[in-house]
Amino acid sequence: MGEIPFEVNEQIIQCIGRCFHLKDMVASFMISAGVHKQLVDKYRHEYKFVWARRVLEELSESEDGRVIQRKILTNLCKLRNLPDSNVADRNAGLDALRNLKDLASSNQLYVEEQKKQADVRRDLAENRVKILEERANRLEFLKSDFGRHVTSDDRQAAGYALEDIIKELFFVYDLDYRKSYKTETQQIDGHFRFEGFDYIVEAKWKKDMPNEQEIAGFKQKIDTKLDSTRGVFISIPGFRDSVIRQFSGRGANIIFWSGQDLYVVLDGRMHLHDALRIKIEKAAQEGIVDYHLPMA
Image (cartoon, rainbow, N blue to C red; front, top):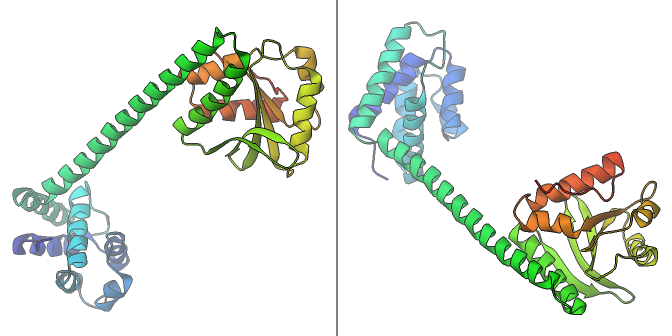
């Protein structure tokens, strides 16, 4: 990075000398721009104008130092008012700032910095749009796959498809998900970690709703894990109210998802993180383990 022109450098010194009254504020300003405290303290005994000159001179000796010089310039140009209200001559301080901004602009220094920041903001916005578009496309594919199996007569194939859809849905929202695996004694349909808790997953896509024995078997899997482990039971046709009541209240550790809940996320109506969070909060705070995500 090239050196700051002499007249700009001199105006920076004028600004530091005229815009600050207390040396503590000068030191804080320099440190906030990236000047090492050791260098700040090295010349602190000098008058503010001399202090600023000595620091800028040492910064100009290295590439990293010249970057910090630019940061000092940029931070001064961003000021809309004097940082220290106790200065002896407020008008002189404001004039020094205006002159610095004019010099920086005419030398395309501050303009260049503003352009870089604008470019960064534009790139971030463009990347966000791309990410959202890609997510929407992947969700549309998953929703289409889900819809195709709704009308299929092959329920076993639908069950396998459901496991894949859930796994891909978590990947779309950047959540790590372990697909179906076996322990020595158990078959686990999936696992994920969310906000400090582990969740094991049971996913069913059968014609009938799961009965009490099926859910009790899943609860036993959860209870053999660490105390912080919870369960998510996904049943596309939903659940009977009488069965849900058996697994609510004291000791409840299963959150129930219906096909409608899953569709709300697949359709992009709710972010997966938000959906998980609201269902967890409803279960923890109100005891509603089968809260239905709103379709609207």
